[in-house]
Length: 307
Image 1: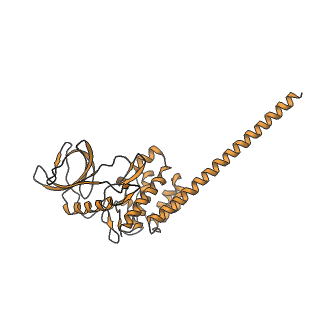
Image 2: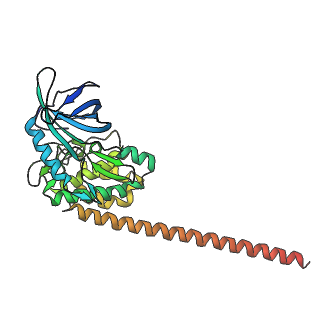
């Protein structure tokens, strides 16, 4: 991840109890979930349930994230909020006297996108991608880009399988410059665009998220990055039917996530129809073979019975 501020240094041990200064809620640290430029996120227990708690020394940035999370919570797809639900916002005085800010979110239980695809198959990629694009379209219509879109910020819930976005730290108002990003998913790193916050910035990242599923060790830029990414796409057999749409996103040709979603849906429909035609063709072939075999057997039986 690359941003302007320095990385937050707060580290908490398992079993540490965080008590809110104002609301007096208690949270017991279970384990670290992740850390970034603006604080660290911990899995905590509270009153018999798990929650995700983000803590940081950077109160101004934390306040901004809380506002973004509230904005995200106002958006819904199929009765589900975008992003984790905001549960609590408070301050905490650490044992050494240091004052820090924290906010508490719904803990979204699920699997990482690569893990889910590894378990359930590549046919799920486009299905989940359509759901991700629907969520991004809502965010863009609200005047923001997600910004730091990467595999680590995506969870797949299990029942039913659906994408959930986590960590709103990279959300940026459209027209501004994206400050929080991760090289592999950042089009400016690949020298294929700027960091101006616009829908096409997120859509580039979407393609890199897909590639990260099949290239877990990632790959680095060269002097011919467009050619490199195209080659990597076409080397993944399950992605080949959708490569034209994915390359349009890499090239910044989509003005909205909705456009990309529609193109993918059309390709998916055509592919299903083609598969259905092929299955019908195989069925007809099998029936023809059975007919010919039965004719031969009948002919042999007729011949033998008349000798």
